[in-house]
Length: 83
Figure 1: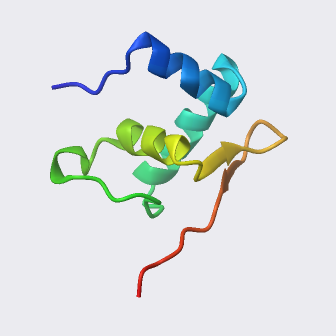
Figure 2: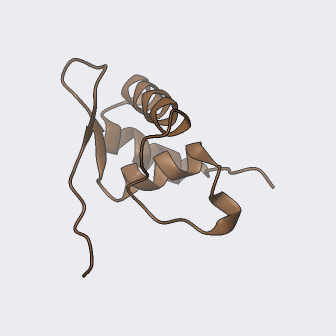
């Protein structure tokens, strides 16, 4: 089954990212990072292990990534690791 967002959720993501363009760029850049081997900032279930769009969206929803002022750099927040 493909990952899908409903319209209200998508509108919320536009707001988090600062608009449709910024959301598109942010997700594209972050997915490229994940495909290239960068570590995930969230844990996901086995069914989403290779679903990089899902992972990037979850990172955005949790406030762990944002697009830099240059509209090109993915800015990541440090996550606290449990001991």
